[in-house]
Each structure stands twice: as C-alpha cells, then as structure tokens.
Image 1 (tube, rainbow, N blue to C red):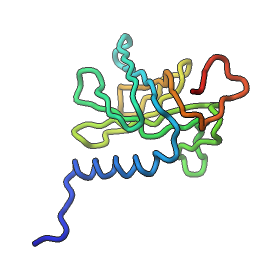
Image 2 (image 1 turned 120 degrees about the vertical axis):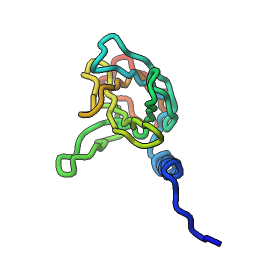
Image 3 (image 1 turned 30 degrees about the vertical axis):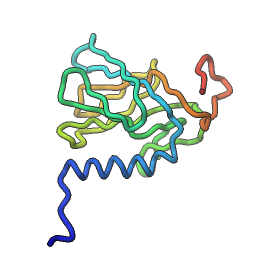
Image 4 (image 1 turned 120 degrees about the horizontal axis):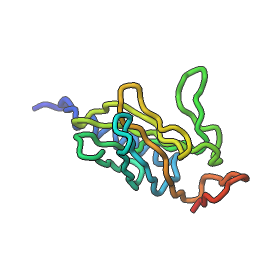
Length: 152
C-alpha cells in the first residue's frame, strides 16, 4: 500500500488555487471585480466579466480561462525585487493581477489597471485587461480626491 502518491498537474493546480485562496483571502476585501478583456490583434474585441476573486472565467470562444488572484489598492513595483506591491490600503492606484490558464496550467499573468491607462499586455499575450469596477467590504480607504468612485 502506498502512503504517498504523486500529484497530477490538475491536482497541483487545484492545491495551488486553494492554498492561494486561503493565504490571500485574509488580505483582500474585494467582493466583486469587473474586468474588461481586450485584444492587441483585434481592435474591436472586448468583453467584460464581473467575477469574485479566484473565480475562473472563459476568454471569448477560446480554450483560455482567466482568474483574478490579487488586488492591489495602491499598486507599485518594488524596484529592488521587481515584484508588485501595494503602498497602502488607500485606493490611489488600484490594480488586479490576473492569471491566464490553458489546459489547467498557468500560461501567463497580466495586470488590470483602471480605464484611461493602456491595457497591460504581457509580452507573450495578445490579451490585455482593464479594471472597470470593483466592490469592497470597507477595508480599503477611499482617497480624499476621489471623484465618483464609491467604496461599498
């Protein structure tokens, strides 16, 4: 009788997703997030998805899926580690990290920024994302100069 079995790639992905859900869920306060997917190749293509954190959604009629795995209320890049960080709990520069999945494996990752900024395309992808809207539970602080964004 075997005590330990090897994990298949789909089990690894499920384990990784559950571990991230447990680890990151205590850090985020996002109840719902709306993401717009765009194409670098087809200018007229765009589609919006309103999802919860860690909820997969299919990209158009492709075999690709995407999932929002992190939210940064005040997005920045650490210049020493070159990793995404948040500077504060104030919604100064919100962004979301999105994993693109193909055949239950991480294909790449991209970031979604608010409208008005160029959609972020990863170097290998033709799909970019825009952070259209988000609903929070009140943990994040509304910036003093907020125009019409309401934190719920």
